Image (cartoon, rainbow, N blue to C red; front, side, top):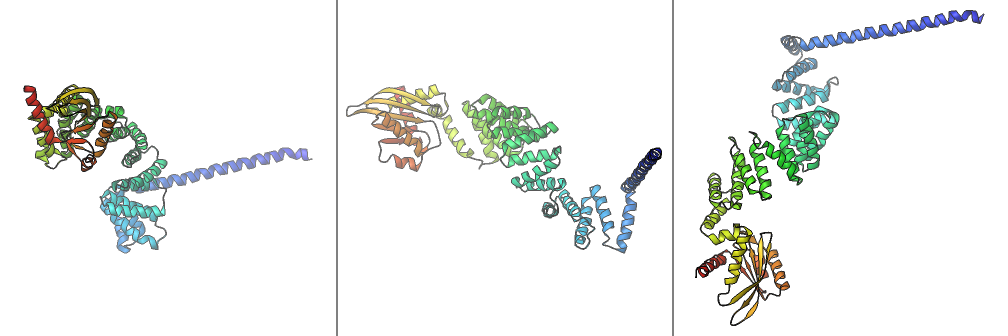
Length: 462
């Protein structure tokens, strides 16, 4: 009997399954239809004539000035139309109603108020509002990005990095977030991280020359001069960043003692039409330094005088002008400070040989240290005494400190010199002078060396 009922049971089960399937399908259809109607309705609201929205909401506000729906409709309308002064006003009203109306989304209203203030340039109000919004919700991309932007503007770069990194985790492909995070890392001194983000930003936007320039600065700070120079050289001709890029490129070449290329870089920077005054001053100042290294003092002096005319207190330009004017009138001083090592050593030999007029001097040993100073050991014989004398000639017009003099004293002892003469066209610090008071070392500064130059010039002519 059971076997006879089996076909009917199977048919019944199949019928039930079919009915359930149809019911589910119909339910989904009607639900999707309802959603479609809702989407259509929302779409109609978005494209509805704005004048009608304003008219309807104003009518509602006339009856109830605190109608939250009407205020929100106007706030959102003006926000989407970028009329931020009006959206700010309506969001401000809504913020005042949040405490007594739980249906108002306090986070959204506070966020939009802050963003409206930001768009209007009211950075303090924007910052306060966004900071409060963060107490309501932290994991919001718009909030993290714009608050990071404000921290960057406030020069709170460490805080900016934390916020923008969080925004980047939520939206990894957002170009502006990647870009600003790279710039924040750079300002915070995190050059490795900055370079990584800035490379991404440049990949996203190859024409983002500002990010490319900062990327080059990262390489420069990391000591990767070849990479930095490649980018700076590429950017030298850009109308906006070109002068600064040329300044960096020239500085790298100047530090590497490639003076012709440095001169070319600085001159390219100065050829731009719109050069910021502070950049133009530094370009001229460093171009003058490059010309001096090439022994073109007339050109250098002209540039320094131009800088002085624009800003008399710029760095040490006034002092340099007086110094190089004097150099132009003193050939020996030029040779001592600026000539190639071979000419410098020739002059040092002449000074050492003629230092003791009443004696006979034999030069025993001459050493040159990176063109910074030369040491000469001499054997001097006079009628009254004979001794080993050590000379140190220091190529600087600046200040010579105690450490240099101490080192010279050590060299004198190693060579068993009975007396030492430390000679420079610059000056000695008080510490250096105190150190030699009880030691057989004479310090010859600018005043004395100029007298030496005159004397050896006379002896040479004689």
